[in-house]
Length: 265
Image 1 (cartoon, helix red, strand yellow):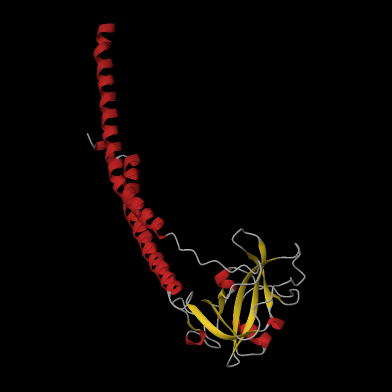
Image 2: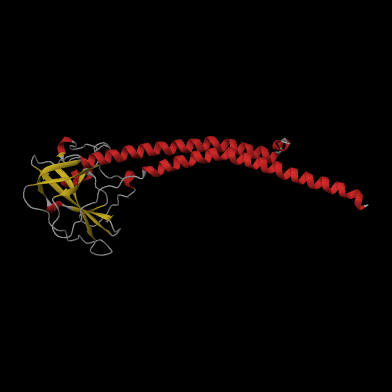
């Protein structure tokens, strides 16, 4: 009855099924690892955003590379904005996917070091984006600024090309080392996305909080792959039973036809 399982077609079907089962189990395990990683990352971001601001120099210093654990931490700094040397970051979008600039303003601390502050998004004055845009002035004098600590931007991490020959006071990436050379000053590693004080007028628009990664989706994918793995042997059994039934019906028809042949003669 089961001799057909030794045919080439059924040997291939069986081998494919045997390969699919461990493959799908591994894919489920991989998705579960992704779920755990994203859940841990979401928790890290949530904890960082919910923490009280700490002085920025407790987490970063000139030449320091902001780590994953330090990213998004709320920090504060006391000093004044140096608008004469602020620049804009090209090709940045707001929540409505409109292309414009991020405003990057040096913030001079009381000890003379410089903190880069991303004050938010402003629209471009025209499609060419060659002219330096009009930027609302920040509060003057000595103030306290707070924001989320961010690592330096790189082409490798962002996918943004660091183009050269840009219009005056325009950059592609926010990078403390490059800004330290431009400003000829000690610049703290990374930068902050400003959260307070609120900007004057309608712009710059403060940057929104980072969104959480969709960890539950990876959990659902893991369960899905494991259900597929369980379904493979069930599907194989169904196919085998159908083959047995089809062969039995074919044999019955053949036997009936052979039984009718003498009567026809």
